[in-house]
Image 1: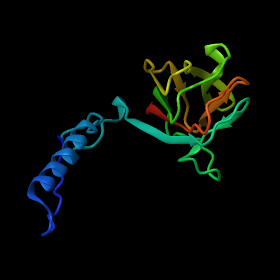
Image 2 (image 1 turned 120 degrees about the horizontal axis):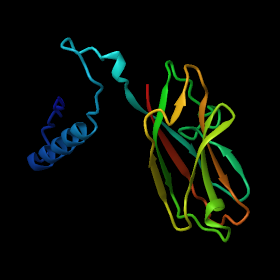
Image 3 (image 1 turned 180 degrees about the vertical axis):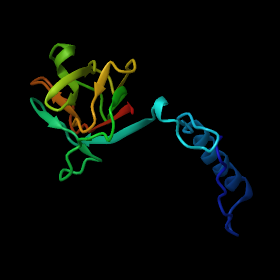
Length: 176
């Protein structure tokens, strides 16, 4: 059950603007209200798992012929890896670029986004020329991981990459 958010009204606010903002906030709250199964006390039932998003993992200003390890919120001092506290699986990936993929190479090589478990590539998402986003959903347990495995994401551009100043942001969906 989604809980409404009360936004305090300032004396100088227009009533219609305030009400509109409150509706938008509450609607987004309902859309994001993804919950694991709970018992009658409201505790998560452990055998159903829990889904969460890992990210944002990001890099700025991609250039040709590079392999990038994506960082938490594009902070270069914080490598974007995740060590889960229990076993589970990756159930989705969402990739966003600030500029469309451009290059002359085969579409399968201009930009690749790799999901890593340790040093092992467990899946690769390829963005076609002209694309600014991609997403993929995985069946539960297809891309499984164990407690304390290191999960991460790489972005790889080939020599034909010509998109200037493009940034990349990736989110992983996991179920534990």
